[in-house]
Structure formats: C-alpha cells, structure tokens
Image (cartoon, rainbow, N blue to C red; front, top):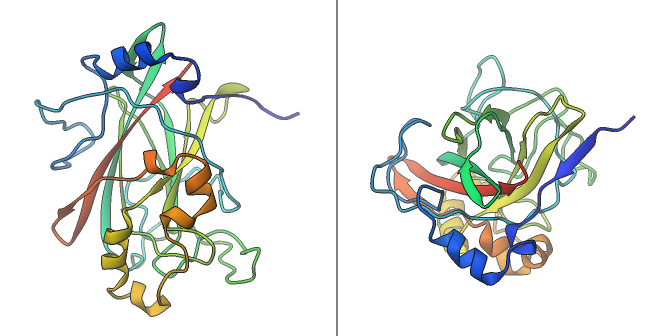
Length: 250
C-alpha cells in the first residue's frame, strides 16, 4: 500500500495579496540571507528576515532514498577522494506557516542530490546511457533541521548535462518513515553569469560549453525557477549561500 503523503504548496495559492504583504513584514521569520556562513547554529544578530514561499518542481529521474546522513556530501560514504569542483557551503532555513504564524521547523529531513562537475549522478543508470553509477553515492545526503530550522551542507558547484540548466535537487520531509507526512520537492538554480565563470575552470571546462541556460530550461521557465536562484557570495576558494523556505501545513 502506498504512503499517504501530504504535499505542501506555495503560500500564494492560499493567501491574498494583503496577507502576503503582512507576511513579508513579519518579524522573527526567514529570508534570503547574505554574509558569512558559520555552523548551522550561527546566525548574525542583524539578519533581516522574511517568510518566503517557494515553488515546487519535479523530482526528476535521479532521486535515490539513500538515507545517508551527512553534511559534507562531496565523497563516497566512508571516505575516499572528494569529487573535484568549486566548493559550495549551503545552509537551509526551513519554517512552517500555520494559523497565521511563521516559525522555525525543527526535525525536517532535507535531502540534497546533484550531478558532479561533468554531469554525472551517483547511484543510477542514466536513461540516456551516458553513465552507470549504481553502487555509488557521491553528492547525495541528508541533514535534519535543528531547533531553529537550520541545516548545513558542503557540496560542489554542479556541472551540466544535455537538456537542463545547472541545478541542485532538494526534498524536505517531516517524517520519511511515517504513513502521513509533508513532502516538498524542488530545485535550486544559479546565476548564469556566475555559472559561466565557474565552468570556464577545470574540471568543468573539460565538458565544454553547456547547451541550456536558465531562460531556456523548461522546468525553470514553467515552474518559477527565478524564485529558486541561489544568492552566493565568495568564501575562500568557493562560495556560500543560504536558502530560506516556508512550508504550509507542516
């Protein structure tokens, strides 16, 4: 018997414009952030916060429920060399919208999965025959949000593969083992100019120039991709970014 999953949906589908404006001005809720990223429990005291709903997007063909809990997803489980690429530290901040209030959502399971610098996913046989990486689990993992709704990953800037713009997949579940639970799936995107800059470097340059940019990607274009673009800042040899999302009915 299949699991009964309660899907979340963007707040704009259930809130009128006045409510959304009131929500945008609420204190002690979440927002896109800039500045340094420390541990998952570190937030600057002067952060300006806004409750932000995000659009759902397709899971795609490469999700594998590895149940692999780790923050740094760059290598195979148990050690081994890290996948080469520009490091990206990504912090999620997950909140819930319930009874007119936006509050942090602790205990949410956040899965992250993506391709490597050359467009290869782990753990699957590609439907187009480009690779067969079954038995591997690089660039996959999950974290559980803390009491403030935060979770932190270390990954690499993704490469590209034919037909898609550059992206990272994520899934948020309130309880993956429960018969009922909230599940929200979407994707993260990157500024095209920044991607061009990163992909001009090794090992990305080995694959050549990508064939799809954000505006030509069907999933990005049809499903609110401009609301899912990561704001990144330079940090050491890589980048860091924070992504805030509020889920309704969590």
